[in-house]
Image 1 (tube, rainbow, N blue to C red):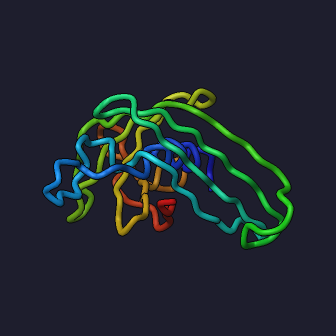
Image 2: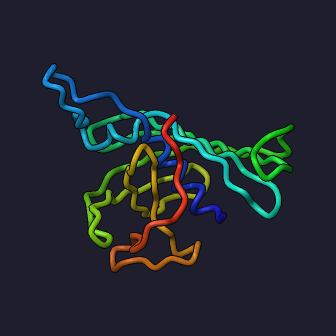
Length: 160
């Protein structure tokens, strides 16, 4: 996977796990747009006979923004087990910029700004406790006139 995908995953992943909308009415909707991303997201991705465990953690800073920490740990096995062989991390901010449609699905437009790699426009959606990002141009995807991906990737981070 390319750097931009991991940076995007980190930013969005940092916006993971959230609290309920409160109020005692049984409403499971988040209070603010960013809430659905707050918490930790993780998954193991096979990579050329080895694997990478990507973990993103997101904290809320406002109704539409948050900070993220992304950690990638490499393993010589294909299933993220054994002694880690390498690791990398990054931090940054994620700011929701509105929504757009990709097919029949409404996704959030997100501006991730990495402390190492700078800004990247991305899209994100939560499906069945999984965080799915857009397929960036760096990873072979197309972008719209505003620079946001036009398709969703087929991999996801799982809510922890």
